[in-house]
Image (cartoon, rainbow over all chains, first blue to last red; front, side, top):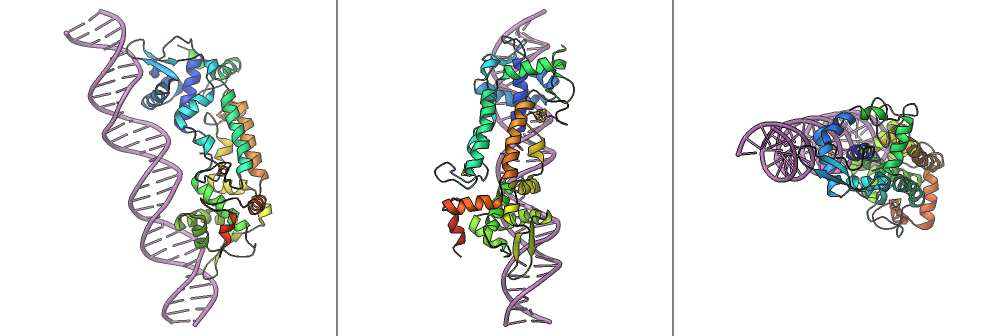
Length: 153
Length: 153
DNA sequence: GGTTATTGAGACTCCTTTGTCTTAAAATAA
DNA sequence: TTATTTTAAGACAAAGGAGTCTCAATAACC
Ligand code: SF4
Ligand code: SF4
């Protein structure tokens, strides 16, 4: 799999947060319910994003988490790097240790192109971009139903 | 990681086989030594490729494995599918169950492009193509040294 | 036939990822 | 102050991937 499960959950939650008012703290429990992700597991993942400065959290009643920056300034890459690390963009096809341009394997040229395509996609897509698209076309973030079911409070 | 370790080992071994005479059976022990892969582990992986008809094997002295077809007719995709399955090309970014064009997530359009790039690369690159390149430029298939060290018998 | 070289099959261990649970810490509200 | 709501931290369990090992099956050679 390209992205780990933790990373996918982190992305889904980040999209959820980006779809709300920016100043609002959203309880993790709300997100875990709506996105159908285990609460404790999601908590651990979001703690990583908080540690990386992508989210900020607040304890106690009316607490929760929120994005530190507007979603339009957060490319997907930020979340992927925070959770899965740079592995995807540095390791590769034949997975030889110490890989690079200097002493490449035969797949390097072709793989580098593909890898760049992945990088471009993750760097140039922002949370807000996907949220806007999701809202406009009622796309889904969860197993069933469209984007809008996330907002029946 | 894009490809599992088993898959990477399978690819490396397939490249090794494609670089030899086609009719020749190569003992797995020889490959595990040259490619620095655990013998028993590589054996299990190559058994999968044999079961899928990509390799054929022969027991006993002078036995080993060989490609069933010339390397020029074997795209990398065959090996990836045999070992990792179609997961990489069907599952995706947000990993929602039952994904597809019918009920997509907001990432679908962008992801589909990237996924196609990966598919194209795997489908249109053959073993022989990489072997020729590797031999010409003495690229590497193992941690140290170039392509040629595989052939000091 | 007996020994040796090789793949085939499967049990088994080890490690990472995924997921659950419990307890502590912080903030609010009564 | 006490109870409640929330995140923080970390122990623990379950599942899958990665890797090791043993023994059986097959083929060649003596
Ligand atoms: S040489 Fe390039 S393609 Fe090959 S393993 Fe290294 S980074 Fe990957
Ligand atoms: S809709 Fe497309 S991109 Fe989104 S999870 Fe499904 S297949 Fe992947």
